[in-house]
Length: 157
Image (cartoon, rainbow, N blue to C red; front, side):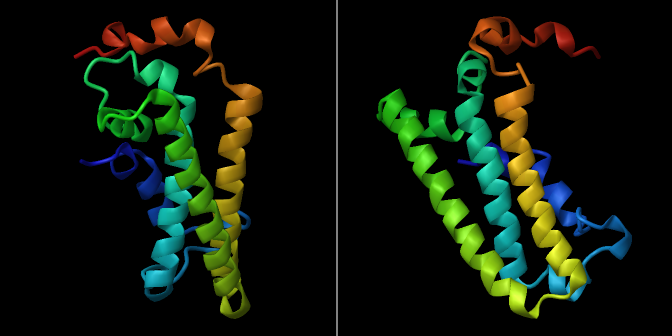
């Protein structure tokens, strides 16, 4: 089953390869950006943000008809309780954070300024997403979950 992290806007954002800490540096060179270790770092960052979002958006997404791409919902569909599924997804997020940190630490000693900027950019993106959920958005607030899950009136042909 395809998880929404493969379909979301996250991978295309990472594919630009531009250092968020200093966009003036330009994109990471293609031969560097497409290395296996750099691509693994991109996947770790993407998984951290997408799977964290799956936990935080569960109240809304579980109410949406046909919502089968949320990691928590996928795990629950295998016969696990909702709490077990949240715990499983949270453990996966923690494992991705650990892997991201190890991979970033391994890249840093030989990285040029552009690659260092890309690594920093991923760190900013992860932290920014978590701060957005915790301090800014009401997107996933329980008080709005039922209404926000019904997006039929938002799509106009």
